[in-house]
Length: 265
Image (cartoon, rainbow, N blue to C red; front, top):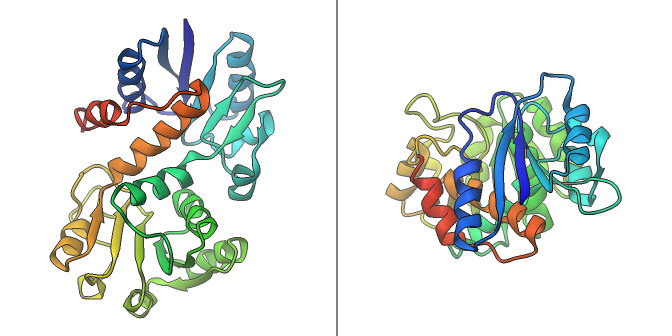
């Protein structure tokens, strides 16, 4: 039996186990998905221990996405982002990958969003960084808006062709934008949006990385404006799909994983 898992702290409310185990059952794969909760400062030790125990693959969540870089060989994308959320143990040394970026791209494609033109990413934290690189790699011109302008400009300096702004620039930035992604936690704990509703329009695709609640104020405002809306569970699903396919070499049962995920929300 293969063992896959997740390291993070905390991990007790993770939605990854039911999603992955539904896939194993659907494809009759003899595997389990378990969670590990090392103390802060023990990320590298946890990766080493997992490899010694024969764990086949790991997902990584907060606060360890940067800390595990010392224990793996990151691929090009993970190295540029500076964070790892998926580890593969099939090589001579653990390899690190970042499927957050790919998850956002695949979520948009699932909704027939054409990935060209310009994108606005709200938030310059870990999620914003991964998504900005993912969209830029697809060829979009990325503008990053953040409460702290300095952080937006610093991230934009790392992302090819990107530019950084404060939140007060959102109205102008969105006028001709094709894609909008909220990569902040705004909307998770209260019914508000990080984007003025009058800045949204019907030529826009709106992805909110927040998945609880599944329908945020931003998405409701986007739908009212005629935009294509993509909830955060799609991004969560596809980062898991990408990890599953990397580990197993098999096409993921996306519908089954989606049903298992949304059944937990």
